[in-house]
Image 1 (tube, one colour):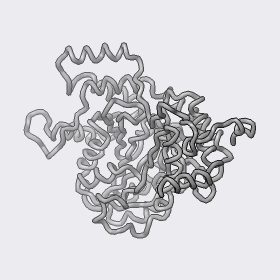
Image 2 (image 1 turned 180 degrees about the vertical axis):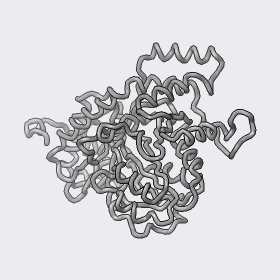
Image 3 (image 1 turned 45 degrees about the horizontal axis):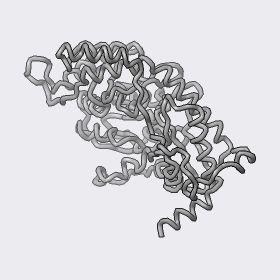
Image 4 (image 1 turned 180 degrees about the horizontal axis):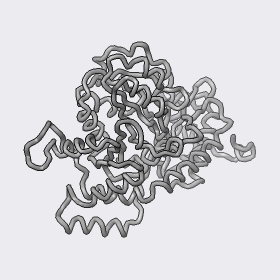
Length: 403
């Protein structure tokens, strides 16, 4: 909590008539590309070559990523979503696909595009990743299992791989957030049938847009390589309906620059989150998703779980108070996929998803970027503390503004 002497000198919150803590705004993320001089040289060479796709830069990114992930095969694609789609297509997924509802919608979209039907399972109340025991109960007639390393927190991959093997079905990990995460010292990217990463602008190692498919299955990797080029192996006799899902040489160049700093970025984000966590240690009604002590998360997102009764504000109220201070926030992932309009035609999950239904309305993601200063992390944490301490006044102010 804030020291009483400091609190006495602290100005009023903006929602209560004070000045904004961040007058210029605090964005959710801010992309920084390292070593711009070297990147410019790469980009100039690519432009001079006249080869913007299917070139050596994409191949170099795949090789570097495979070394980093300690896997034999990595395929670069246009996006994580496209990678998930093509993997599910290559696995000939048909029928029920068990997956979390607390995930980004692309997890479900990929299964549907490939011919599957989502069957939603619950998540663990502490990690917010897929609950293996709940998933196991829903595997009857399933054609595949999908799980998400949410916010960069590694799933319980050993148990999930085991239940998929027992059911005789593939397991695909949506690893969009987890490029740089580790499970008990082993890089995420080593597990399941395949894992698919994102390199979009909000990720820790962005390429601008792009994704990576990692697998130990050489046949699957070869299939995805063909699939990302319309299903055309090179002779224009397409073997199946694929996509234009190639990563460009330009995006690969940015991705290589980002990948070169990934370990340092992940280490820095862990330092920032620990500083934030320590600052809020005694604040009631605030939790953060748990990460196993043996694991490493990328902390792609700095996410809070808010209990209104203890904290004094619900998520919309806290989000509004922080917005008044210039702080950008997101409600990742609310509503959960089973409540989204795109899936309204599906029967409600049976049995229900009590943990997902409880947690989804209570999560709020705050800004976090690698180059954020310790001072900014402290300011952000102190704002969360001050909102708790002024909860009654904030509720009254927001109620008055809505009337």
